[in-house]
Length: 42
Image 1 (cartoon, rainbow, N blue to C red):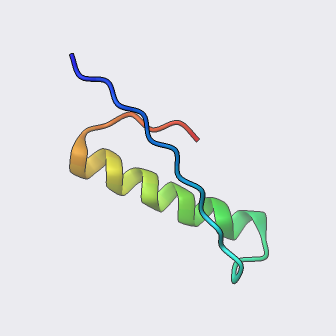
Image 2 (cartoon, rainbow, N blue to C red):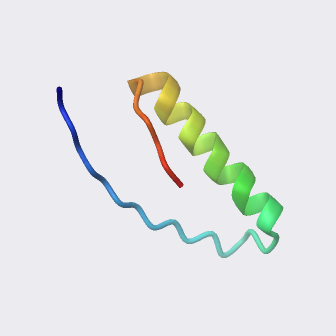
């Protein structure tokens, strides 16, 4: 079993609403899960 840890900090200055920021993060998480079959925690 392989285990890896990665911490990423995103800065979204053009997105002022929390709803917009969540939409971007959910999109990135979905693409990672579909492409690499990984688990992602926010």
